[in-house]
Image 1: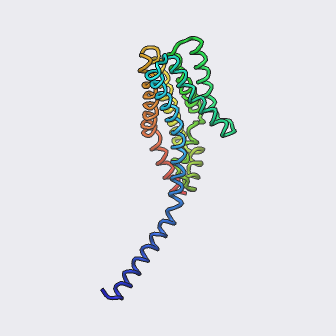
Image 2: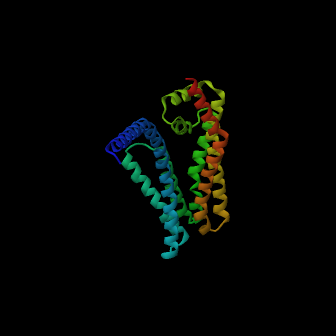
Image 3: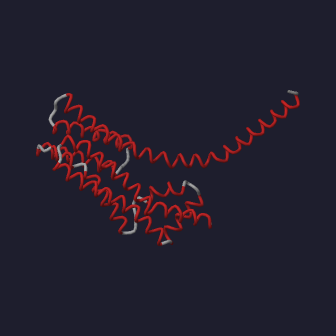
Amino acid sequence: MSQTTIDAASTRTTGAQDLAAQDLAVQAPAATGAVGVRHPLLQSLSPLLVDAGVPIASYYLLSSAFGLSDLAALAWSSALPAVRTVWGLAGQRRFNAMAVLMLTTNVVGLLLSLVVGDPRLMIAKDSGVSSTVGIAFLCSALVGRPLLSAALKPWLTRGGPAELAAWERLSTTCPRFQRAERRFTAVWGAALLTECVLRVIGAYTLPVHTMVWLGTVLLLLAVVSAIVVSGRVSVHALEELVDAEAARG
């Protein structure tokens, strides 16, 4: 191969690398915006996984390996999320309504269960959080101020200035958009209330050992159902409206 051929190949390679670098530089802001949207979602799900997985593992370990009663095993396993919540509040040094609600539910349920001596009450107490949040979601949708719109907005707009401006215009001037916003929050509220009812029924009709893991399954099913249903009845419509409005400018 001649030196001229080698130089030409080198020039093409360098040019391709420069073009690739330019493409990456252009795409970097968009990629950063996408990560910025997904990362909070992962952060919000991680406490749910911890609060669901640790108590289940602790319960079966304490009841099977250490021979504790159902009430004692449930009490100790419920104390762990409460300690984690207190630690999180101390670290944040600011008021967190959801964390306080979870902590209050755990503490009140734990005290009532110890006084009454009923392990089923400890299982049913977890429905207090989902029912409260579900009712809040439904009420906010009914009064036209859906609570989940703030969480949905960065996901659908992807941080783009045109999409953000489109969302603001649609949320104040488009009845179809407003109805879709309310439907999204209402679906999540209905899913959480349904999970609450099923958990309470199961707590007093099924064996305690079964409900320890089934309660978490019910919560996960409620979340998955809300994601699927809200996507079909609300998210797709919202996304189409935002993209169309952003294109019009």
